[in-house]
Length: 299
Image (tube, rainbow, N blue to C red; front, side):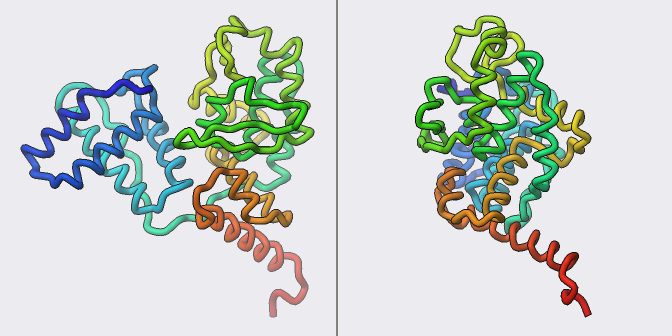
């Protein structure tokens, strides 16, 4: 559990005394800031938050919240960051270069299927790190799991006999997702001899994915892995992230005829309206392919 940050109470008190904010506004700001602190965790100081970290957090919010709600969260964090600078707690403002959410949801930009396949098929299987990275990227694409869910995944969550994975999502809600054959093979290779057991302190905790020191692999560590592997496969770093794997999983499944409610359950969306955005992506892709390929698409 995240330790309460005293600066939050100080900021809210300042808003009350100096700005005269209403009780409802203060409660909304408090919820937004504490939600971010829960996501950030206790392991690193708050002044180490970067613009990239904040963008990653907001991207996760966009999965389940309207643009107006994400914009308010950014506004809450922006005000708090400014307060921390004024108080000498932080030296920089990570929110300064983060653009506010636009009204309405923008369509996610999934990678083409051939790009994803090329990346996954290019991964070597030589070292323990190779086996870890292959299992990690296969899992991100195969399940569409959020990066926070992958970080928290434990070995006991993997059921190889029943071929499914128990994922713990937002609000500690659990769901079961299928373990496809390719993913099952990648996980077995990583968890077998020559894989996870070769990292330092392999039994220090039960988390599936570990860093080179044997600790729990963090969100930032996953981002570094994706960046490095994408570069090796000739994919622009700006076009890929853990969130893009999630987008791509949903979009590709719908394009191949999956029922939207199945995709909703797979991704852990509380509302089907969130999943419907991927339907729009599929239609857009279909329209583009049709215009390029059908002889009667143009005059």
